[in-house]
Image (tube, rainbow, N blue to C red; front, side, top):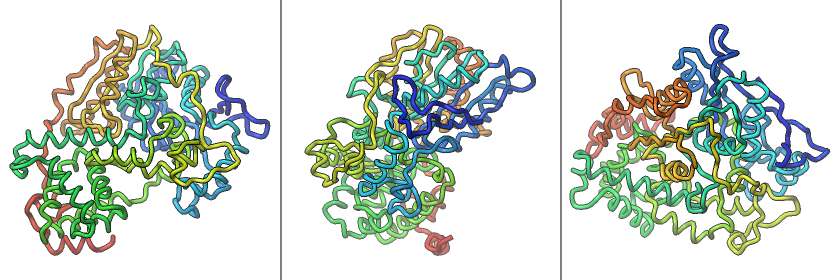
Length: 524
């Protein structure tokens, strides 16, 4: 269904006369079975993003409904600005079309035209803020929810929307489930600031590599040193000799510097439980870099590049512009750290997603920040308002919990995207006794999707969500028995993964068969 929400809520912004007064918000619903919809409890799912579409969450919608035996109404709300809701774009600059140099990303050179387009279309861009997204949920609850107890599940950035909803004090919300927590309103050193992401990612990567010493298969290949020391030695050698055989090979496949290319390749594996065990043999082979290693690593880079380059239909309806608007408005330090400072933070990280220093010129163009740090980027100013909105009354306030509501926080100890330290910070800050933090030591990002156990690959995170709703948010009756059924942490490389990515079942010392090398080199 589509429900119409005001472009500007009172106290958030004022819609210009030239703008459409409303936006569309898309909601997918699976109703309780039989005649129970009018009285059944409700679960509202708030995905991460912030610019991503919720389309990939359809299975969560169905699994929650089935897990509750059909005795629940489940709603999946697509944020304003992305997906099937009113989508934030700026076609005047051709920034979000196939004709743009960067596809969906708005490059600094495109920002002036895009900013003018957005100013003329929407006026104040706080219309697409976290507060506006939370008010959409509040509005939806008031207009369309049956009045029965309601639970809100948020993941990633969705946890920030849920925290903002807490501040709006909805009296019918019985409980909040926050999965893979981000923070935006705690003390500055406890916020999920984007410029700190490289260092935070690196901290989790170091924790993962420390576990090698506790694993016999991994530690056997790093007897005189450690996995971390070996990786940082490789990165140092890549920087000092970027034309060496393995450094040049990584640069060729990743189209960036050898060290940053390697960091990104490993960072992409870290958040995949099935593939993260490939990290130690990759580091081991890069350090040795003999002729056989080159063949194995070349196959890995080809297979991994092909996999990560596969088209994703959900990207077509996502909005990078919305994601960047929220990121730069609510998750960026001001004044911004300099390019040199961002590069220094990166230097300590052995793995990452994307170097933050690459994003600095875009931030400066969007924000029009008047600082020496932005001046050094060479980004030019322009007449239109920046693609940014100011902090509001909720931005620096710790979320408060209504007396009738409880909060369940779930987090993975190997989550490098939203590290568990932020869940711990929020847990300590919440002023309520009706709260619980459940930490999965070896789980990466998104507990509900990453905690598979048993032959049918149920997830423990989903079990916790269902138990929380079934017990009406009573944490004393939360069933956590599935945690004892979680598989043990293991760095052993699965034969299937080794063959698929290395062309051999011996991840550390094997040589790929010629047929597999040819298959990896031949485009599909």
